[in-house]
Length: 399
Ligand code: DHB
Image (cartoon, rainbow, N blue to C red; front, side, top):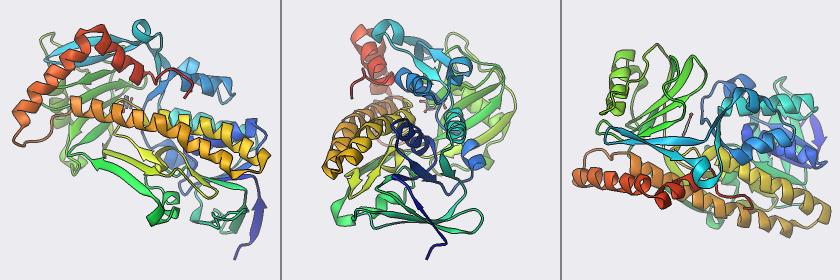
């Protein structure tokens, strides 16, 4: 039973970057949508995630009219550092593949998209409850939810986009016997930090060390984003500031005397690692996008970029499916999206395995030395550096 019925063309479950970008791009193509999310806008805005956007994704935000704030507040990085054996090695993306990436936090991407939807009169409902997706195998699927004021709302649409993230409810709508879930777990996670210090380096540093992996990233002149490898079951309360800095300095120590600036830790959390893909990405009139369909470990910053790539394809395919009144047009979506999904799965897996020391185990000493050999292979030849640069910057456009 519902109190209100809304009719639209596309219902979007999930108001994170994937869902909001889908709504924005569909709007540009003249297609109406309603977006619902269980989380409040503040909850999404304060969940810290990745920070690197491919240049193509940055261009899309600007050129499609979301916002040009990234050009003012983002930082263009023309390369990155791999650090191992106590030395840093620069991978020069610009020189190797003619591309760069943008340091621009996912929270800012979200804010820009949410502001753009509000500016353009988009219907976005944050903080809703009890979302149900029904009749997905009919011509008129329905999304039911309870709005913030307690009203039970039914949205009738032609298609539903499931963009509800790594704990997706939408992906469970695909019947168990018709779906395949590929994936693997890792014996480590990242301890993610926001700290109040000046910047440590002009670009990111991915560091392999005997104390484990660490990543040095940035946010502003006075707030930095740092990560170090930890156990998936790590408890953040066991880590006071002194212990955190001791570990981070050990991960970054080297012959060049590099030291991180130290300062107060203002936020800490454990980020789980997982590689995951669910196929098919379409079921009836439901299409899955972003983390709902696939998750990558964070090493290499592919997650948000993949979600943006999915949505770009959807924004091309869905309007054609609607105009042609032909669902088979939708088959193109998964074909085009999955090719990049699996390339990114491999890249994220590769970067993760190359840079993290697996805890303990018989082959620990072998793996450690083998990883150093692998890193040497990457940095010491132009082919090795180009391979990393092509993948990190997101492959040439097309699909
Ligand atoms: C950030 C996160 C990543 O996973 C990554 O590979 C690079 C940067 C970040 O939060 O800045």
